[in-house]
Length: 351
Image 1 (cartoon, rainbow, N blue to C red):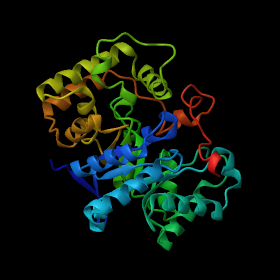
Image 2 (cartoon, rainbow, N blue to C red):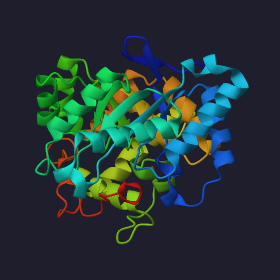
Image 3 (tube, one colour):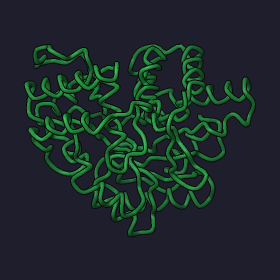
Image 4 (cartoon, rainbow, N blue to C red):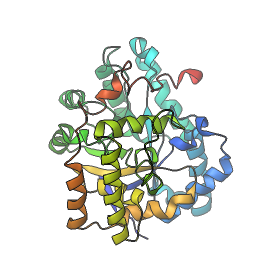
């Protein structure tokens, strides 16, 4: 199967379906590294050749580093030519006010060491609180590291439109922005998409299946309410409430099931495939603990949705309530219902 690819820069292509690494992090249960490496090899061989990780995903950069070594050993060093690894640079909240250039460079260099590379393919910069420290200066340091050859492409994650515009205004060009973007959360279309189109920036989307809510598992189910089984479901249940509530969410699932039936597919695959049709989207990030859903993930990139399919989905979305604020604005309020469930100092143990 040949998956579609997107170009992020000169000579830099990615698979439009990206394997996320968050579920390989230590907080999701014990991980067998050898087994995880085999899963990643199978994923790459199937055509998903782009991988997403982060400095704050405990142990994941090391696993992907081991995967790269294994892949080169089996298929030759040249086989790594299409493999792209996107990581993140996420300074801890409690260090923002005292962050220095050497501290930031050490963080980036540590990611390169873990991944076993001299130059990181793409680094996605995140900043928890604009009021603490100088995020624009930190971004300028990352651009300097890029000039030094430590970083190939510089990107951001979860920055707001004004901040992204400020970075471009300062000569800091972001190839992509990783952002929460799904049928339940269209905040990037308010302002960010227009800026991205103007500046040539593309989106890498996470949350396209809303932690699993956008799947057949939840079709026809009653609102779970109360305590969710994990923090991800808690997060996206709040999004569903803001979107218009459980009844409207069920209408969306029913519509997606009808579309899926036409394509002999499933709700989750359709929900992610739709996002590949949205403005400025280069790729969707699919979370996976193993290769159990590899066939469905591959289908995301090849599913050809018709105008009729998209119109039916839009008709349901037209009944929804647009989420408040800009990209990631709700989550930045650490005292609000969306921000209170976040974790902010995930690099602390290794600092």
